[in-house]
Image (cartoon, rainbow, N blue to C red):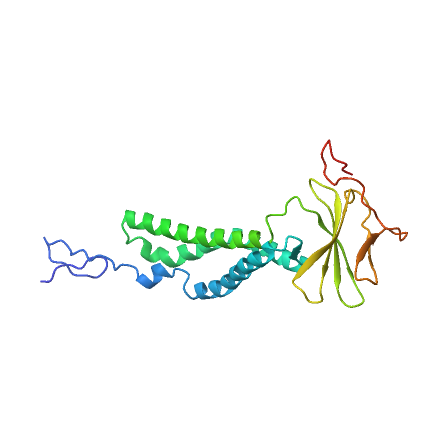
Length: 233
């Protein structure tokens, strides 16, 4: 008479313990590429951005009066925020793909695997963020902010920056048509904190001036530093 079947339908001989079959290890390809095909897409997007910012940092390092146009700077700000939020999303995707195999790893293997993933992800994130900051000459937290943009008859753009956390001044940058960078053409200290934004006047000699609503040229007024010993505004 055969031995009775267990709840899962497997017949076992009385008195003998069932052989324990160890679960298979996770595929090596899955552990090395936990994002799967998404890794190629992520690299195709992130790698050119990092290379672009590194090259820009080297090129713009020798031109302190040159910076990116506002559209590029805004795109970099959005990218920097996305990069800061990406570890949460990447962690969820990786956990979802590796979870079925993660339980078969020994505790020390789990710790090592998580540590390696964290180190790789952190290094990529720091490199990308550092390349963005380097291409912009720093975080620019205390720099004047964009106030207005005007166009010349030949298509050039003049961007007026004013204010600043630690200073009050106007800065005028001029960009060529369809250019990614712009060059500082004018600095007027002592203005910009609480005053109406001036207008740009394009002169025949290729120079620019800042004028008020009445057409009067705005002149510097002392220092732009908000310090007890500076002129301020």
